[in-house]
Every structure is written in C-alpha cells, then in structure tokens.
Image (tube, rainbow, N blue to C red; front, top):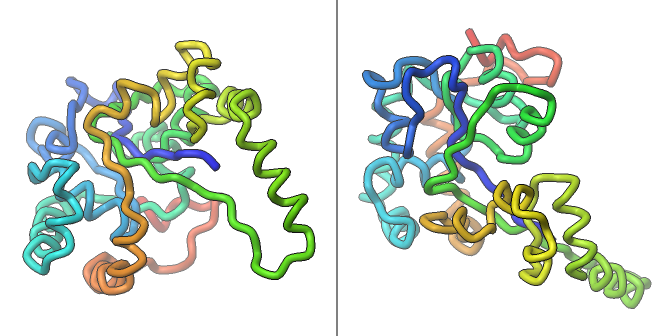
Length: 238
C-alpha cells in the first residue's frame, strides 16, 4: 500500500549542533535536553540497538536473543530519565515545536506536515526505520473481484504518484518514484539515498516475538497516568 518511516527529528533552535545519528540521540552531554521515544518495544528497541552500534542488517539477529534484548533495555536505561514517551504519532512534532523535547523519534509524515505549516523542524534520515503497510481482503467477502480491481487501480504508478505528492508516505510501486519531482521524492523513506543504512521492520519477527517483548517493555516503561487525548499533552510533559 505505502511505506512509512520513523526517523530522528529535532528542533534546530534548541540545539547548537545537529545530531547525526541515534548515537548522538543518546549523548546527553553534547545534546542536553529531553528526548521523545515511542512508548512501545517495536521501533524503540531497534533504535536502542542502532544507537549501541548494531548494524541494521544484524538488528533482528541480535534482538532475537535474551542477551540482545537485555542490551537494548540496558541502553534505554541510560536515557530513561530524560525521555518523554509518545503514543500518538502527532505528539513529537507538537513537543518539538513547544520545546518540551529537543529531539525525538518521529513519524516522518507528521514532521513533514508540521514543516508544511511553517514549523522549523529538521529530520536526520540516517538509519531511519521504515515499515510497509499492506492491503488485506476479508476472507469470504462477496466483492473480491471489485476489491482486486481497486487494489490494482490504487497500485498503478500514476496513482501512487498522486498519493505521495499529497502525503509523505512512499509508494511501494517502484515505477512511481521516477514520476515524482526530486524535491518530493527526497522526502520519502524509500527514495534512493534515504534507503542507505535504513532498517526495514521485520513483521514476522514481531509476529512471533512481539508479545514477549511488549510485555517486558510495559513492565519496564514508566506508567501512564491516564489515556492521552490530542487536546491534552500535559500528562506526557510533566
């Protein structure tokens, strides 16, 4: 359907130097201030291992072991007191703009939307993490033929081009990318240079091991006092 991406976003007005990697994200001395991370094992454990020097190609081999999971949580322990945890994808752009955090793991779509509104936020796409969203057809539905025709229509390069021109998600049809202008393509997670060093989320890994890791993360992470809504961020900034 499309590819989305989480990368390191930051407020250049709050930092003397631009962070260049997830290793910099952990450097509290050189880059003082609060950080934002997604409150889930998925994405966050991968980021911790990337910050600890694990190559993208080795992430899931390492994370599949008890020692690798321990390594990720130990890495997170080092900045735990300086992290504000987000659940809604829109939160990092709000917090970065307000100065509640100086840098955050963030969905590129929401940072792009904030930039379109004139917010001064930057993205470092080095070692980004991308995921592919897919169409699914409900078993036994009586309109399967029409459903397949719709998916074929939506997957045409000229239609994926229009989609990516209006929302910062990347086309999954490779033939759509050359149809985009260079400025638009450069923002997308699957554009040439952005794929260098990028990590693809392993859906099978999370299907098999996600429950155990998410349960461990939930025990490790600070509790949330009450459900967050989009009109009230105070619970996450105190």
